[in-house]
Length: 84
Image (tube, rainbow, N blue to C red; front, side):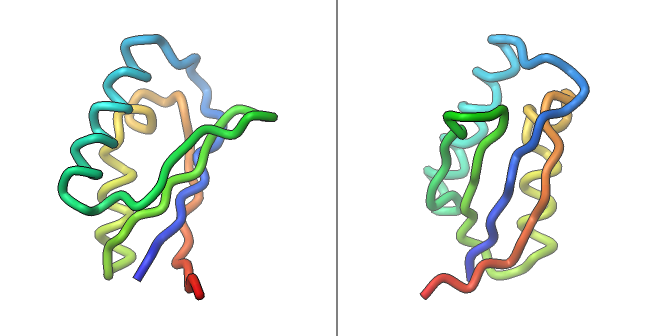
């Protein structure tokens, strides 16, 4: 099962350090096979993540621990995605 995360603008400005930690976190997820796709939006602040995990709760745990979220730089919406 796949889960899609919309990363949306948060209350804090994303510093270079926070973005670097976020990218490192994503690389770790990718290495474990938990992250299928990721990327920023080009026409607005935020981005899209696609997780390759079965349980919604696991996807929620993953995004809740992402440094870009814990820093307050991004909020998120999480959806279960039925890709065809």
